[in-house]
Length: 537
Picture 1 (spheres, rainbow, N blue to C red):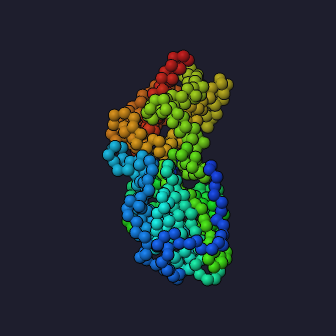
Picture 2: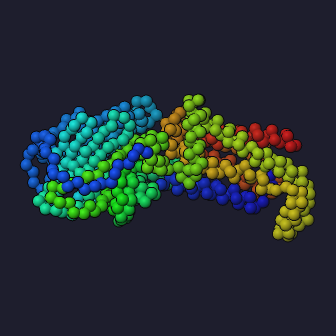
Picture 3: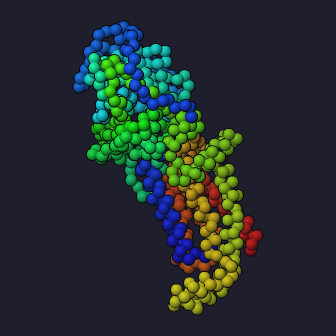
């Protein structure tokens, strides 16, 4: 393969792009919708139990501290199905457990189940436009698989109805804001999503690393989903995310492989995200969405139906629950390639029962798909090899005039219908496939903790013993030795021989599934090249 300066620069540019893009990644991954909130000026419902029959007074300023709620036992606070366990503590005012029964924190079968909350998660209706941390409730009662909790503040009774389905990761919710004073009042009804989130420090490194399971703020405003890294956002306590008067479809936290969001139908929402406090490895974050409801007469009520999803980012499950969740699986710039790759890997897995083998089979299929380009590349290199004596003569003739030398070489190759850039043709289409595979393997929950064989117990994590990256380096070195370097000077040849070392270093911290893809790709490439070399010799 003839390697002029332009070709060499193109390859180096690809490597630089890979490093920059990987660093970017590491710092970052229907059922009928309910109607919008409507004002209901019906009379106040009659009390349902003893807790509601007790006299109460409207409060102004701070909400009352929990002192009059119906005491619920731990069993009464807990709701579960085959997929999830919820625990809501009314004294705290939030969810103290959201445990996913089918997912564990490590590959060990005895590892603890994934819990989406390390500190209470507050999902509360508020009558304020200022973000704050949630608080305990004044009253709470359970009715079957529904928990009803309410408090009073500034002349409003704010009631929350949480419905826990018998299957899946969904959460049904209704917020009710009732004017309990004797006169009409303006209402600013809001939804608060607040939690203290812990995160680990991320070490900086020149060598790209796989995206850690970092928590991100996620919101879909004006039909666009945006992510903001929580740690980076909380580090700048003066920064605030604010979007006024916008359609809001969802808000919550993206935990890389898992999602905890609320789905709304607010058409004129004022959205804000504010860090309330920050510690070394944690941050109190408050997401607030509110909108003006106008005048609510005495004893009138406004209701908001909501839905929630707290579970794994399995595309099919999210789309079947609500189409608005489909965009929350962030597959990066090459999602148009990543989605088909993920679909094919999952399809192959049904037959082979091993995601590593599925990746190898897909790699072979891709190599067969790109075979015409490989064939054209080898034919071009063999043609260049046959013309090498004449090209060497041209270089010697114009050795003191590099510009004229390049012109004459290009004229000679054009006359003989050979193109040195054809040697790079098989590489260029594989660049977006490489990044798409990278994103799939580091983002898709199907590959989280998926074993291959022996010591490779997690395809989404790096090889713990670096066996596969080193083996890849050896195979790439062998491939480089077998590749004709026709037309290259000594310096270019040395640079090309450094490529296996560069790729080996990059692969050390990438997902082992990514390394397996590259290793299979290299082995099949060597086999194709050897066969074609003999064919065109």
